[in-house]
Amino acid sequence: MIPVTIAETPDAAAVLAEVGITEDTEFVGPYTDDWERAVLTVPQRIMGAWARNDADLFADTFTDNGSLLLNDNQMTSREQIRAYMAAGYSGPLKGAKVHGWPVQVTRLSERAAMVITQGGIMFPGEERIADRNEIRATWVIVAEEGRWKLLSHQSSPIKG
Image (cartoon, rainbow, N blue to C red):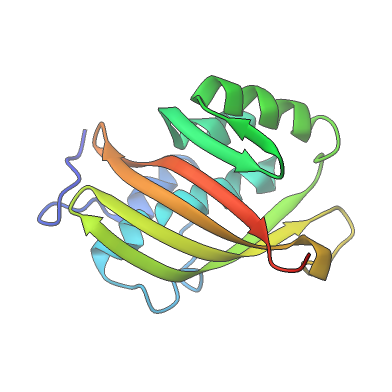
C-alpha cells in the first residue's frame, strides 16, 4: 500500500484509475495541490459509484465503521451502507447520479481532512440538479490502509 502522508501523497489520477474513474480536473476547482487532489478522490469515487449505480464501489470508499446520513437514514458501517445503496440503486435511485463540487477543503492533520461540497442528485431524464435536490455535504476523510477513506458523510438540503 502507498502511505498517505504529506511527503508521500499518492497520485490522484492513479488512485482513481485503479477503480476505473478518470480524474475530473474541473471538479477539484482551486484545490490543486497534490494533497488536496488526493483527498478529493473520495468524492470523485462517490460520484463515480452513483454514475454506475455501484453499491460496492460506494461502500468500499468508506472505512469499516463509516457513517452515512442521507435524509433521515443513518448507517454506521460499511456493510449497512452497501445494503442501503444496493437497495436504492435497484429501486428508487435506479439510474440516478450525483454531481457536486468542493467549496472547502480543510486539512485537519496529515491523515485527516474535512471537505464541504455543494451539489445534488439528478434522476433519469434530468439535465441539471433540481432546486429541491440541491444539498451541501460534509465529508470527514481519513487516511487508512494507505488510501483516503470516508469516515463520515452527512448531507443537508439547501432549500427546505
